[in-house]
Length: 66
Image 1: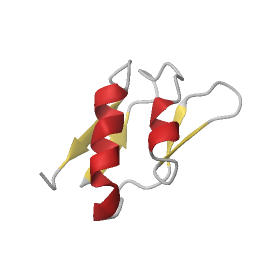
Image 2: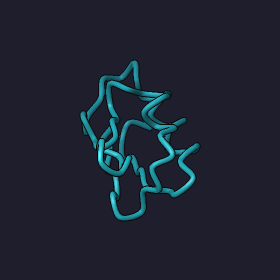
Image 3: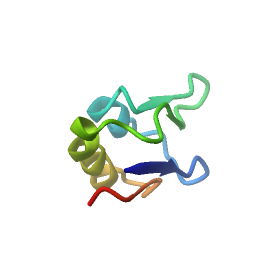
Image 4: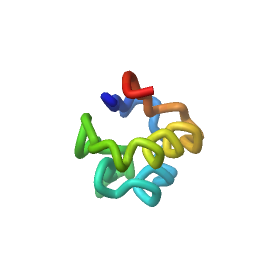
């Protein structure tokens, strides 16, 4: 799985950070998503997919590891 984020789309809701703090963080100044691990381990894939589904701005995309 490869994860990508679009910081321009991010609205700073923070759902991704709450779901998968090992993969996502937020900038202190504006809450915009920061990608910590673009290729997370397999045990986090389901949580990352949930973060994609829950993102209100659609700022997270994943590819591979179906």
